[in-house]
Length: 95
Figure 1 (cartoon, helix red, strand yellow):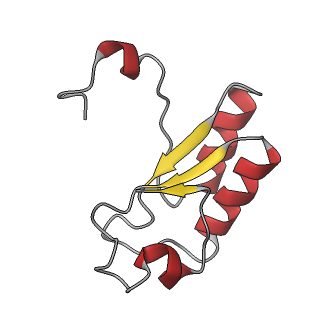
Figure 2 (cartoon, helix red, strand yellow):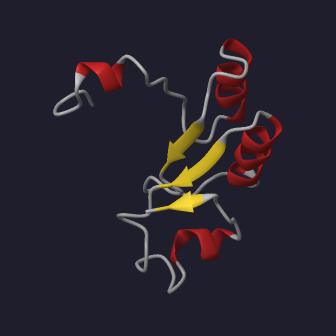
């Protein structure tokens, strides 16, 4: 995962496990008020578990972070409105 990612960016990035709301909550608990945004793909080949995206969105809003969906792969392939339309989620930003 680190290939091509500058060290300065790697040092400012923390990760969570997809489809694991507890791991997202753990990051917000570990870095209170320090996470500006959560960037993720809405689907990684497997569908998000029931409510996962909406729970992540709620955690972001509760903690003052933006939810950014990376739709470079899913956009217009999953649905004409992208995966966000398919899953009924409205991110703060999307690619």
